[in-house]
Image 1 (spheres, rainbow, N blue to C red):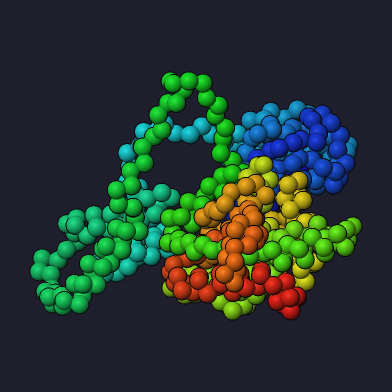
Image 2 (tube, one colour):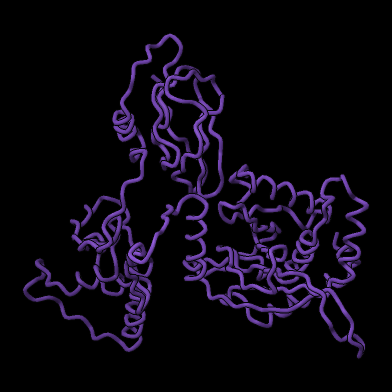
Length: 454
C-alpha cells in the first residue's frame, strides 16, 4: 500500500481545505492524474496522484482540513491486494510518520471559558534556545536571570515576562548564607531596568484590551455559521497584524485624469484583440506609482522592528488586490520599472483571471513591494485601505467621476480620480506622502509623462 501524504505546498503553508475529490474509494487512478483540489490560505491547487493503482481509502471529506504530512489517500499499486483500510488507521499512520499529523477533521474548538494556566516544568538546560520574545530576554538580562531556569506558562512552552518576574520574586533555594553585596544601581541602570520592564509588559498584552466570548446570537433569531478558513482566514490574520502593528496614516487627494481617459479609450479601441488590449486605468496607475517609488524609496521598503532596520528594495513589484468571491488575494506584477503600460496591462489581465479561477500559484503572490487596491468599478468616492504588511504603503483608488472644478478662473467639468495613500508613519511623514501623491497626480494628468517613463 502506498500512503500519500499531503506534500509541502510552499513556505508558511501548513494545511489546506479539501475542495474536491476526483476519485472515490475503490476507483482506479493513473499516475499524475488529478487526485484532489486543496485550497490553502493563499490559493487553490490541484494535487496529482504520485502513483497509479486502486484507491483504497481517502483521508478526508470535502470541507475537511488536512495538514502537511497527513495521509490523504492510500493507494494499492497494481498487483497488490486492495484490502479495506479503516479511516482510523489512516489517521494513526499519519501520526506515526516523520511529521506527526492531526486527524483529517478539524478538532472541535475548546470551550469559550479560558482554561486556567498550568505551569509546565522548566525545559532541561541542554534543550536548546528557550522560546521567549526579545523583550522577555531583555528583561531577564536586566534582572540577571537564566531563562533556562524559568518555568514557562506561555503557549508552546514560551517564557513570558510574568514568568520572569515571578521567578525573580521567588526565594532562591540555592542562595548562599551570606550573598555578596551588590553595588547600588546607578540612576542610568535603574532607568534601563524600568524601560525593560515596561517593554516586557507592552509586548505581552495591550492595555485595557479584554476580549470576551461572543453571545449566543441564535437566541434572538436564526443564524448561519461558516468556518473561517483558507483565504478568508489568511486575510483576517494579515489585516489584524497590519492594523495592530503598523501606525497607519492616510493622505487623500484627487487626480485630474480627463486627458488620460481620452488617450486610454483611443488606445483601447486601437489595441482591441491584442494582449492587454482591455487597457483599464489600472496599468497607468501602476506605471505612475512605479515612477513615484523611484523618487520616494521609503514607500518601497519594509521595517524590521526586531533589528530596527529599514530595508529599501531596489526592485518594483506592484501587488494588485483582486476580489475573488472567496476572499481578497494580491497577485504581483513583477518588474514594473522595466515594462511598458501594455505589458503591465497584459500581466494584470492574466493574473486577475487566474485569481478569480483560483489558479494562482503561490509564487505569484509573493515578493510585492507596494500594493494598489481599486474599488472604483464597484463604486465609492474614497476609501482608507489597510497596508499589506510587511509592505509600508498602499494606494486606494475610488471611482472616476465628472466634477466641476476651477481651471484658469473658469468652472469646467473634469474627470477626477480619488486617491488615498495609506502609509506606515514609522518610516515616513506626512510631507513625504504629500510629495509622493503630488508627483503621482502630475504623472496622471499628462499621458506624455507616462510615455516617457515607459
